[in-house]
Length: 213
Image (cartoon, rainbow, N blue to C red):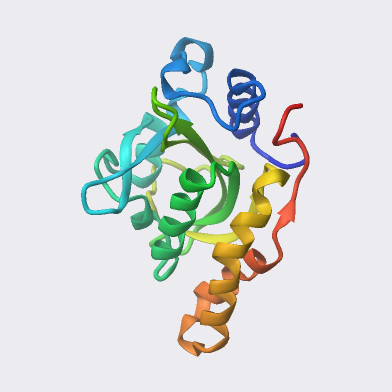
């Protein structure tokens, strides 16, 4: 899957997730062994649905929190994203759980003083012991290390694209998500930057390698 992802962290995490799920759609969260991915842990996070029907951080690694200059546990995942992208990203993450779809979001991490760095975010569904898809295991990785990184906090993520990693699940995702998005944006000039950055969502790139037979 190196062609699908640019970060070593996301590539290694996806490989691990694929290994422990075997031929199933997704692994159970109690099958995760932190010691097996200990070098990745600072860049990892876990998301869950909260009591207000939002999607929030259950856990966030030290490097993820340092990147944004704050503790993220308990905070909404959407708060990291630019403007209207917040709600869209929350819905997409919900689809990762509902349809058990692994995917990658590409973004620009932007600071208050207009600096930026490319960011790759991997979202992988996890099941409870009863088999319900109720959590997301994620990785958030800068694709370069500018001198100011971690000294200057990232203010928001500005999304630039999405890659679906399991071709068997893409049709359902497209039907429920991109058709609604296309209709809404065609009628709403106010969508602005949100429409521009998420334009690729209407033409998902289906990448092989998500399912192991």
